[in-house]
Picture 1 (cartoon, protein in one colour):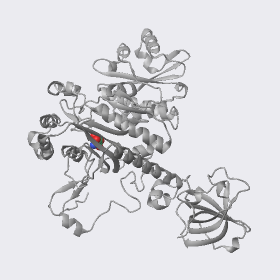
Picture 2 (cartoon, rainbow, N blue to C red; picture 1 turned 90 degrees about the vertical axis):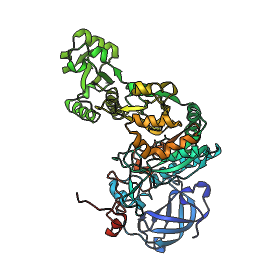
Picture 3 (cartoon, protein in one colour; picture 1 turned 180 degrees about the vertical axis):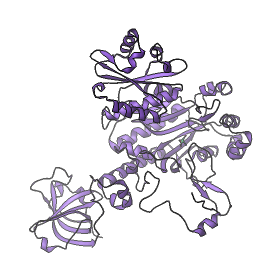
Length: 577
Ligand code: ASP
């Protein structure tokens, strides 16, 4: 089809040119003697104009059109459009295809419900803002390919139909027709395959990998998502981090023009937890967790005595507006993180106030105010818990809440850091001696901590690293165990009997007996990177066809029931709920 230009690219330098444009009629105003049509294509908008509306066919919103005209300077520029200094004076207009009235107006700013937008995603995708986000996503992938290709990485595809193996989340299962009663699992990540590629001598692997996890959804989580997945042999942790920082710097520069200072700083897991109350700390604002145990155990409040952690945060400038209702909301938030009660004290007119004061003598009040350096209008929130992780996560959640609420985070700032020295194991609360893997079971414990596996597993730290950007876990990886016996032992520590290890992972661990190189890797969450770099906090904005929060697709109506015949073929019987 004839087309000379993408309309959104036209500028003053094009004035006088005869152009042929294709696109959609985004907005049409027929003022009787004047006709204006905004033509939209993938490059943006340009205004078409005619002073002979009667010469042209009737065009409604979202008609597909081809426009022939001359670029001319606009008398009154439109500062809101990149093409606002010019317009295209129409000679001929062809209606290529008609459109029925769309269910919502297709414009960057929309108040259409998200489910409606997802139901008509092909219309939603016409919005330039959404296309821009998809472009950011694609450019990240491009930078990644360029960078790792230049570093000698080989793209290898790994299977989608896999053996079900516990990796933290619930598997999506696919019934097998040929193997009655058996199921494949969709990959939660290509973890085992990429390690086997290292045993296979590939040495440097990468892949844009689709991953599937059947978890409850959140604003930053989808049932299927994409990892930029890598694995490399014969590199230590410093080398792997340096390699990947290089990619991040390239991507930030090339995709959004942001300079990232290298090397990135590293924060130990327990420092991140102690100070920020999170293993993915957003360090762009200065509300920090404070350890109040030694002061609070001097109070007469029983809940702060004995074997527990007491921590607090000071929120500046909010004491005067902190009503009972606000405090109740905070309690509700804290309960989500298993904190039973959050106490509060205000600092106003040079003194503490609040019902908790009845548990504190004056000397302790003074000590607390001095220790925290309290200032007028400060609000102190504090709580206790017997678990170190629980108190940190709970207070960290309140910190995040206030960081957002008070607008302490400057927009368009990027805070990149590695969190390192993760514990190998996460104790299962209320079940002493039971552990889950903090990262995954293939993570290599630090050499110096190996003796602790037999004595104090909870103190074992691992060669694990997460890349944190603006409080999001944008990626994570580890050095891997490459010793058959250690891998076996880790599974035992995670509660698997020898028989279970052999049955579930024998096929994998066996490979380590045939000369497995030291190896490690990382996976970036492409969706999260794209969210961060395109400035949205909604993961669905950076996926072309996402699922809604109920893991459903309002457009195609997946998931759906299937024909009885299909069920019979795979031997699946539906039990009514
Ligand atoms: N497979 C890991 C994950 O999905 C990433 C890695 O360790 O490379 O989190």
